[in-house]
Image (cartoon, rainbow, N blue to C red; front, side, top):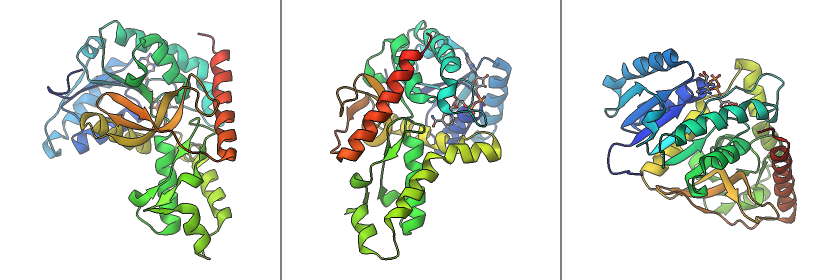
Length: 316
Ligand code: NAD
């Protein structure tokens, strides 16, 4: 890893999610060099051309081109968004075996070219795909993580911000667990500015604890609702990935809920799962040890058990 030279990102998968991320990078000057790889090389070429034509109006210059896996050798970050997208009526977990095979072959290609940077996975089911990516890359755990519940937590902050009429940047609230149906919010650890969220709700008669449950359900089911209307979701995750990339390059020690390897964490052991972690140029500096209520501990264990069972059923 050499963050002193050009900040180089390789993106594998130039579909909706990949290109939303690439567009966010372009708009925010998120890296110096962006390499696009896809099974469909001509698509990657077209995307590189199209993005490059926006450079005259971008905040900084960037080198953008369609490449191949040899470009991974000196990349600082490889982001994997390659895979099959979630279809209407399909859960993220239905995608498991299809995407696991893709993940294995993509990671082998990356590693065969001497990559030793930070590997970020977004392909669903993201927690399991991150597990597969680490297994086949054999990179240290801190160098491999998934987008996890970063998008879900952004959705939660947005909805709470609307409900409470407070800037979402002052809403400190996290969704943890599987990026999927068993995810859940840590209400007792959430705060609005410095005030615990539950105190804010209890002290204002216009707010209601039962509304929090509705907000959680809206977050949990957001992907289904969007897919029903426009077939897939991509802008939100593109922004989340850009935020993660900037945390890495800026060595910012940002707290972001991502899919990380947990060891003996409230009974969840040796799997990747969404938890807030400190992200800096080394990757995952630390997974936050959170004081959870008994109910939250049970939900976390349940979510972890679902992931563990699926890993056991995987046919690779
Ligand atoms: P998409 O179909 O638009 O794009 C997928 C791209 O991957 C295609 O361009 C395809 O050619 C490419 N691809 C497939 N196999 C490949 C391989 N072996 N090597 C290289 N490229 C390959 O799908 P999308 O909407 O961009 O979604 C991509 C993934 O992201 C899906 O798994 C989706 O479920 C997931 N996703 C995750 C989140 C999250 O929060 N983690 C959010 C939205 C979507």
